[in-house]
Every structure is written in structure tokens, then in C-alpha cells.
Image 1 (spheres, protein in one colour):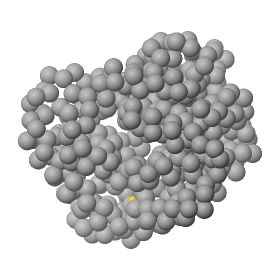
Image 2: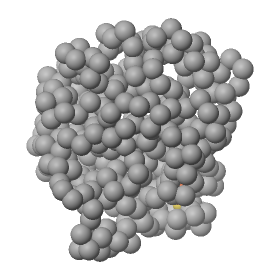
Image 3: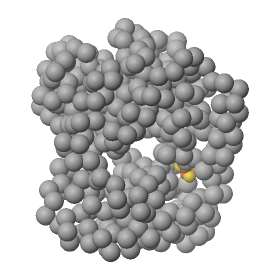
Image 4: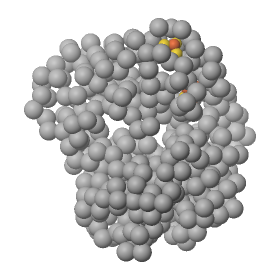
Length: 385
Ligand code: SF4
Ligand code: SF4
């Protein structure tokens, strides 16, 4: 495993990290096995706060707590609420401290709230004084200039942000600030929600001045594959790979949502949360990756199977409220063919709902216990602002 210096934290961190967003769709034992194997491979960066991924990580980090760099996140805007979340994370992970605590920041309003008197940054500073956390972080995937502004306070040690072959705005509007402040860089969305193959996307990222690639891996096969891809020498891309990267960039740049929420959202009269459908819906992202048959045969946890029909029906109903006015396409700065993308998703989701009914998942798994809060089931109204 390759290790890099995580900016001013001075910690040595593995180039490959493991998050929790997709691993948590597996049963507990299978998820824990993924984190355990990651440890065996030398991976020391975990983060999460997604469902029960913390419980999957807990027995693994206990084995060698000082080896790991563990992160968690909150969008709680106030000091008291953020401190409560930190304490909750410590209890869930059964650890005396977290390494990095990120505030999720998607826009300048959130930055203003965090850094105002009584804001969440006070909780992070106090938690660091008390030894509950070691480093202060920001994480966000929408307006990256908001992250840069937060870093300019001089208080932030690590930032987690999206960077991939198609989505490169961080190179210009965030990374110069991070380099200036010697801030640790953790990359999310490295595979662009499944649009870029790991074989190309991971080496391209490894050649950027970043520290951790937080791969959205979902299972053991992904972990082994990602680790093998990054085990290469030289890391520099060959001319053939450079050409393939450029081709991939051209193919995917106009179907990559940048989550610039306020652009399309404000003109959509039915109130469809467009970026959620295009980017955040992990159920849809898994369907895109696996296809209908692959989805039905995949090793999802029983509670996930129990909820799948309801979730996809809710998503499809939302997509069907589209009046096809095309106002969103007119304002999208990246000229995304939103209606074509919706049409493709609607077809995929309708096919899958039929397949789920045929497989009888809802009835078969009706007694499965969900580890998630009752309001977790992703619908267009449950997204974080
Ligand atoms: S085309 Fe559909 S998604 Fe776009 S603004 Fe109109 S109703 Fe909303
Ligand atoms: S305007 Fe375009 S890029 Fe921005 S959130 Fe909407 S669809 Fe995505």
C-alpha cells in the first residue's frame, strides 16, 4: 500500500481509503469483513456516518486504534448539536477519539452558520481540546468555493471533496487554497458515481497532488480490485492511458451532474430534486452499476431488499411528475441532457420494480430488521440541503 503525508496533520495515510456509503448496503458480517480485509491490505483511512457502517468498522479499528485515521461527519449547524453528534459517534465506534471530524458544507450559507458565534466549529475546537477529535475537517460536493472559504479561516486540517476524470473544478477553485494551507485532501466520488472505470479513474487521481482516494467501494471484490489497481510502478499514466482518460472525460462531462443545486432546482415547478436523482440516489447508482439482473442477484442486506421496491417506486413517481418543460436544461451550466437521463432512469427503474415483484422481495424480507432510522429511506425530500 502506498502512504502519503496527510498535509499538516503529519499523519501517514494510505492512498486508498474506505468509506461507508455503499458497504453499508451489505449485511453486518459481510461489511465488517470488507473493513477487516482493508486493514490486512494496509488501508488505514476509514470514514462513514452512513447507516451502520460505524458498527462494521468498530471491531476492526479496535485491533490497532493508533494505526487508523477514522473520520466522521455532521451537518449540524450549531455548537451543541455538533457536539452531541461527536459524542454519538464516539459511542457508536466505541473509541475514545475520532481522528477527523468533518462539517458537511455544500454552500456559503452553511459555512456562515458553522463559523458564526455558537456555530459547529466551536464544537470541533472544544472537542479537540478535550481529546475527542484530533483534526478539523470540511466535506462537501456542491459549491467548492465554500470549502475554500472555510479553509481560509486557517482552522481546517483536512478537506474531503469530489475530483474525478469528468469533474475537475477542484483543480482550479479549491486545491490552490488547500496547497497554500497544507491541508489534507481526501477525494470522494472518484469513479463519478460509476461512470468512470476504476482501472482508469484511480491511477489518474493518484497522479494528482491528493492524499486519500475514498473509493465508494461496495464489497470485497471492489476492495481487492481497487487495491490491485493502485499497486503499480510507475504510477504515471502511459500515453495510451492519457488518451483513454481524455476520451472518458469527453464522453462523461456532459452527463456528470455537479450538484450546483440552486441552478436547476429553483426553476423546477414540481420540485423534483434533480441532483438527487442524477447523483445522490445510491439505490439508482447501484442499479446503474449492476443492471437489473445483477441487482437482483447481488448480495444486498435483507433490509435493503425489503425496502427496494418502495424506494424505487417513490423515485419513479417523483420522476413521473416531470412536465418536460425543459427549464432545468436551459439553466444547467453544464448542458446536461436531463430529460434523456431521466428517461433512461425511468426505464431502468420500471424494469427493476417488475423484477423485484417477481422475486417477491417485499414479502420475503418483510421481517428484516433495518439498522437505519425510519426516515432514512431515500426519497427526494429526505436529502441534505
Ligand atoms: S423538465 Fe422536468 S425536471 Fe426539468 S424543470 Fe421541467 S419539470 Fe422540472
Ligand atoms: S444545474 Fe445541471 S449540473 Fe447543476 S445540479 Fe442541476 S443538473 Fe446538476
